[in-house]
Each structure stands twice: as C-alpha cells, then as structure tokens.
Length: 310
Image 1 (spheres, rainbow, N blue to C red):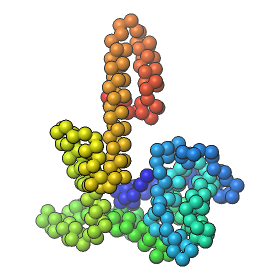
Image 2 (tube, rainbow, N blue to C red; image 1 turned 180 degrees about the vertical axis):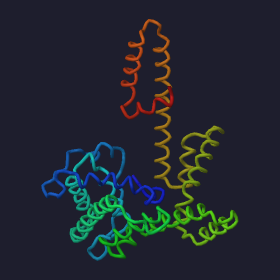
Image 3 (cartoon, helix red, strand yellow; image 1 turned 30 degrees about the horizontal axis):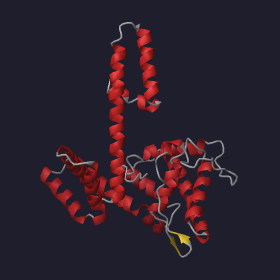
Image 4 (tube, rainbow, N blue to C red; image 1 turned 135 degrees about the vertical axis):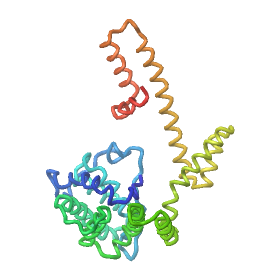
C-alpha cells in the first residue's frame, strides 16, 4: 500500500500532523515491552484489510539499511494510529522487523524506529509552535522547516537514503509551482525555465512524473481494446507487457471491483425505483424501506457515496 509523493510532502504535511496528534494525546505514550499483538491473521487493523505492508528491507554489515523501504514499513503501521495505541503499533513493527531481519541487524532497526517516532512527534511540536516564515513560498518554507527537524534525528547519509528521492521530487514540484506563480516572468520565460527543469531531471524522477500519464494512456488503450471485442485476458497481457504481471493483476482486481460496484448500484437503483413507485407506502414507511435497502446492500461508508447516484 504505497503512499509516496503526496503532491509534495510539504503540501500535505498537515494531514500527517493530524495523524500524529494521537501520539502526544495517547494515555500511554511510552512503548511497553508487554504490548501484545491482537490475534488477526489477515490485517493489523481493519482499515488495512486487503493491503500488504510496504517495505523490502536490506541489511549491510549486520545493520539495517536506512532507506525509503524501511521508512515505508514504518509509515504503513504508523497509519494505524487511532485504531491501535502507539505501544501496540511499535510492538507490531518490531515483530515485523524480527521476522524480516537477521538478529544482528535488529538493534540498528529498532534504534531507527525509535528515532523515527521521535521525529514524527517533533513534527507535531513544530506545527504547534508558529514559526516566522523565512521564505515567501509557504510550501518551500514548510519543506525547509521539516528538513531542519529531520536533521536533529538522522545523519546526512540516513536522510539521503530515507528521503533522497522524495526530496528531489518535492523540490522539483515546488520549483515548478514557483515558476508558474511568478508574476514577473512572461509565458515564454516560464516555458524556458520549465524546459530547463525537464532537461536536468534525473531518469528516476522523470519516470515517476510520467507514470500517471503512462497509466492514463494504458486505460485509454484498454477501453479501445474492449470496444474492439478484446477479452480481459488480452487486457491483462497488454498491461503485463507495459508494466509488469503484478501491476496487471492489481489493475485487473480494480477493474473487477469497479464492475462489481456498478452492478450493485444498478441493482440498488432498480429496487429503489420500485420502493419509490409503491403508492401504498407512506412517506415515513418509504424512507424506512429505502434505509433498509441501503443497509442490506452497502456498508456505512459506502452509503455516503450513494447520493451521487440517487
């Protein structure tokens, strides 16, 4: 369940702050060794059902490698804040580290986890204390402030490993935003500066930025193939060639979910029309029948989406 590059991390950092407010308000904010894992063979918390933990860990000289994969593993489980206490989350992360790492690398991984949680908590404290902006661009100012906090907990090498690519992505996004917002630049000057950014972009960053366009192009191709009579096996093979067999399988699963949702909506609307057309029902009984219909077919969260179809 990847959560990378959320429109420049600075722009959505407020959401992360809200999440980690639970850390400082939890009754027991000190991790305890006795924290137990709930017996759930499928997911750590309900909101994670159907997802897989991020993070493919690496080891070098009996120490865990501080890279983005390790950070993604931490963030995956820290996303359970609100459903589990911080001690429970920390115990679960340590359990996962134990399963994935050799014993010699565990101390370094647990020590990094401790600093990572402290770093997240420090971000909350930073948000609580208004800072005098040192940059006219609030997005860049937030990036600078966040990176200054980061330097208190991690070495330059750790920062480069855990955030290097994301920082490059964010810097590129902010630079483009600044160019487009600069009232002193002509349209031609803006195009020239954006072109310069494109020319200096690393291959990895270019691939990341072009990924949404690649997916959109693939979806158009899939629609054209279906219109021409192609089957889902043909669609799968096309996607597997364009992306990977794993990505093709995930896309097929999403297609199936969308199809199931559309079928459920169609069935619901058919039954709803029958209820609405039943002249023997009073307004009160009609509304009660409609709610029973919703409850029988949709979860509470799904019902929030029904207004767009009714």
